[in-house]
Structures are given as C-alpha cells and as structure tokens.
Image (cartoon, rainbow, N blue to C red; front, side, top):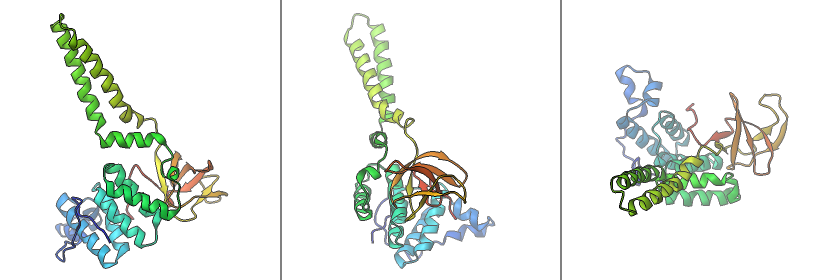
Amino acid sequence: MRTRTVAGLWLLASAAAVPVGATAASGAPAAVATALVGEDTAAAAFRRATALLQAGDLAAAQRIYAELAAGGHESPSLYWNWAQAAQRRGAPGEAMWALLRARELDPADRAVRREIERLRELCGLDPAELDPQPLASLVRWGRRLHLDAVAVALAVLSVLFHALARWRSTWRWPVRAAWAAGAAALLAAAAPLAAALIRPTAVVVRRGAPLADAASATATTVATLREGEVVPVLEVSAAALRVQDSAGARGWARTSDVWRLDRPPMAE
C-alpha cells in the first residue's frame, strides 16, 4: 500500500504521532480542535490517520482525513491516502472522487493521473464518463501551466510596450511587440476564463445510486447511476443534486451518493 506525507513523499508512520484530539486539552471542544487545527497539529493528525490506515483501521483514518479536508487542510497527499483507504474498504467510487479531487489540486501529479486511469479501468468506465465536460481539461491545463499568471504578465508587458511606443514614436518594434504580447495574453487567459463556462461536477460514490424524478423521499427512481462516474451538476437543493449521467438521463441524486468535486464533503 502506498501512502504519502503532507509534502508528497512516502510516509513511514511514527509511533510518536500525536492523536487528533490532543489540542482539546487547551480547553477548546474536541470537535473544534480536530476541524480547525493549526498547521502543526494538522500534520500530526495526518500522520496519525496514515498510521491508522497502515494498521487497517480504515474507518478511523477516513474520518480524520475528512475532518482535515473540511477544516481547509487539503492536499493531494491527503486525498491520495483517502483513496487508498476507500479502495481497501471496497468503495471505488469514493476512491475515484478522492483521486479526482487530488487532480483538481495538482493537475501535474503523474502518479495521481496513472491511478485514476487504473481505477477507471477497474470500474469499467469509459474515459468520457470521467470527463463529461471537454472544457474542464482545458481549465486543468491552465492551472497546471499557471496561465492566469502568464496572462497577467503578458498584459502588463503589452502595456509597457505601448508606453514605450508612445515615448519613442520613431521606433516601430514596440508597437508590434505590444500587439503580440496582447494577443498572447488573450490566448493565455482563455483557459482561466473557460472555468466560468463549465458546470460543477460530482462523482457517484455509491454503487447503484438511484436517480429520481424529484428531490423528495417519495420520488420515483428513473435510472441508476454508475459508481465512479463523473456527472455535471444542473441544480442544487438542500440534500440532493440534479445531475445528468452519460446516457443523458436527468434526475435528482442524494448528496450522500454523489459528492461534488469543487469542495470537500462535510465531515461526519
């Protein structure tokens, strides 16, 4: 079993790892201490969770990972280990969600991409079922290459070249350079701007999750979702998401069955 440290290296769990509730001794409630831990305590909690994972206490490890994520202490390493725990528990959909969440945080992680592909084949999913929105790939590449920062830098460079062209009106090359930098800035900004055009997505984390015709307990099931599939989110209610599966069926699924990819789930 492969696990990672917070920094992304392999972890050999230490017997001296600090329990998650150690900060409660200061007088803060234990729930707050585990959800809103500081960075040092979060690292200790991560080590404790991974030690539990290696010892086979999968449920306890997953609870700590969920608390850390809900408290804002997310990292690709955390989701990698969460995926390992989910796979050992026989929950490939949850493992797929965790790996895709890790990819959202670090699109350049090759190990995560390889593990996603392996799990996709294990679940019998088509590549299109993991990427229902083609623009999402463009957005991930934009984050990987930091195209938002590149676009800003090119735009500033274009302004500077325009200023130079005004200052040295007899020089022709600053004008050409200004327009070239401006055009490049627009191209670099395409990926970050595409993020505003795509719908949020979610992953089916439960086998046989029902797709209902309404967001109510008495609704009729119209289809069954495939575990591990990524589905676009069309509408949101208090405890359900309206989604569309790869076959085009639309309906409501419980938030406990379908986890959004743009945020961590609430810790139990």
